[in-house]
Figure 1 (cartoon, rainbow, N blue to C red):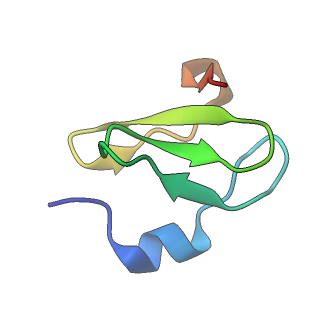
Figure 2: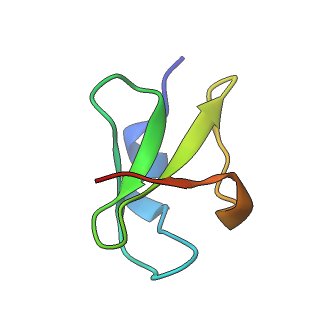
Length: 56
């Protein structure tokens, strides 16, 4: 089961507190401001700064 829309509405980047969006391939959640991508493992978003990678 993918990440629910209700969960996406309340999740925010722990660094800059901006809304995150689901990546098109469903592999992670990307912050719209700082471009950090938080992974999704076993259908659970891992919202830890140490686990995030910065994408262009």
